[in-house]
Image 1: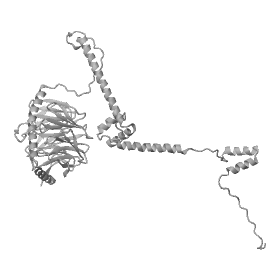
Image 2 (image 1 turned 180 degrees about the horizontal axis):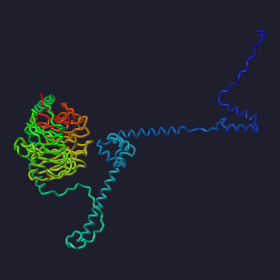
Image 3 (image 1 turned 90 degrees about the horizontal axis):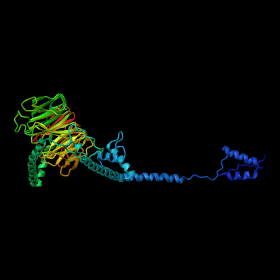
Length: 546
């Protein structure tokens, strides 16, 4: 083959772009025939030939629904952020109960519970709580109306049948049963009649406390006349002294943990209570043992000096009182290692004893949900006061002698007017048990220490908490104001430390670290020179400024 001859060009296959649907329809139309159409139908039914019929899916509807759900969720979260929920866990539980929701869920804490309430309110609306409260008020009003009607019916029935009250019926008479009436239920505070000695004691307390309150107010007015610069200089000197506090003495006090310590009124003795059942008197500041008091058979919760002990009382008189976990309360003198007397009547653990400033009355707190007041002159119990839903742990009397404050394991505190018997202030805000409570010498401030690691300061004039100190890393076992002027506050806790806080201002001044165990008690001497702390490590320590 010569080069001049042309090489034949190979035929290329035609490539179709796009759908072959129209070409296939034209071919089928040309070929026609029943056999071809049957074959195509069979192929379509078998799924080998796919010819669309013009159907389409509406995606916009589903997308718009999803967008609406997302927008609704964002709006709900926005509403939830704007809803204000109380930080009091008791109020949060009450709101959940009013909405018909469970007040707690397994593993849920106070913060999670508040967030759950906020989410619920963002769905049902904040007005749901107001509606439920209005319904409750209506129910109470209707119940009171029913009670009044029932009382009227009862009085009418008694007038018609005087024999039901037994006024004129002989002993042998058979009285017909009264007609069935409504059961009366009163949702209010009630008081029962006390003994005559209680009335006399209340009058005596009023006569005792009013002059002391007058003197305290006179001292406050005199202090106000002191120039502000002079008061500031004094406060700065006190703060400088407190910042220089150091461990002056450390003494092993017992074989078991030391649960309580207190200075004597003359600041020359220190008494300690131990879980071994022993109480010991120590001379300070050299920490030498003076006497061991034997009488308790179980853990001693507290021991306290009479307000006039070591000052005007004779050593053979009752100078101290102690309590123990078996419910026993014992009275002690300074010249004997055996108890002078026992106070009987408690069936459960007595955690604290406290003397009234007059020295005539002794207060005890018990885990039977009550506290009691004993008149040592009359040698009897004159007041058995209930009011807490759990055990009462601590008790302290107002410097004037007019009030008593109690802290309970129900996380609430109460302030009682001893002259009238009324609870004049309800301390609500702690999340866990109250283990310490103390009045300030200024007469209107009060501090509470709790298992929620905080110390709250309350103002009796405003009847509310004015400051919350996030004081420690563990539960606070005791709180104590400076006994003379109340210019600083002491807190002891289970994080092995005690801390000193300014008053007012509530800023930390000094951390007293040195114990190897939980700090279970503390006290300040009456002259303000010494601070004592006792611990689970079986030691007590004295702290003094250099």
